[in-house]
Image 1 (cartoon, rainbow, N blue to C red):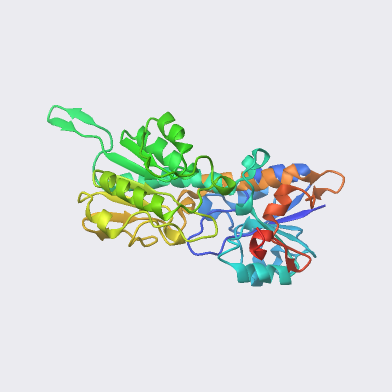
Image 2 (image 1 turned 180 degrees about the vertical axis):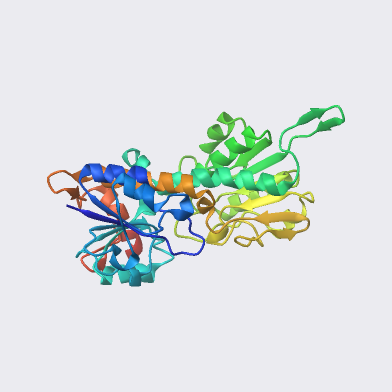
Length: 378
């Protein structure tokens, strides 16, 4: 019987957990034994008793990994924590392969098969396994909610006996999963919303949500999707044209949400200090990419920085500010992945070497780093 261990997160500020009572119950139904570290779900409002009621066994950290075949975590744990697991145990988590390459090498040395869930390919059958999409969805929502709270004025237009309050103007830069949710949330709050992206195909998505599309027309952008569904680096000519367009538009905005990220690279700079200076005092910018270097000049993770009367904010770990919902979605992503490859005869998931999901997410095997993206061949 396969033994699944669920780690309590140790990274600063991490409130999520990689399994919930819902997914524990489903793993048990598949025939797995699930062991959860004491207190693993407390920061996500899940008591140990809830895990026990779902069929899990609770264990202290010292005994958690004894004979564990599969280790579930939100963030990749310190390799020193991984002792006593079965030979070639799987580690299934968000592993930050580019930023934590030394840690990946340590997993390989320990004989662990490290599976990076953020490398999940964006293909139809993997949509329910995509942690980046599920967590980004919540991040886009949270960015608008907290920007609205910091803004200190009303979002919708209000007509009162004392006069009319104009609707806030919100501008979303980057229309991926987070950006689309940010647009939808700002619209629901009653703001006048506009958005931009380097991918021409997103124009229709923006307009379908009732927002105004702001696009560079003088220089070609990306006609369809970028690599893997993400935006890719643009030409200098496009960057210059976009900066000019944004400068004229951003000066009129009350709220700006930036969401631009390129996997494996530092976040692109979208807003300069000069552009911040052009905004109205009291405006708010939420930088969703602050943990990867930031889209906004001067943004600092987990701090509200005021420049030219504009408040700039962003979280190092935005989904962790919605721990219960973020954990529920993350845990389902992991369950959907493992159950899709579950072999009833073997009593555990089996990953075919030739499968494109296997090739995409497997970082280490047989004591070596095997992922092509990390080896520089993809």
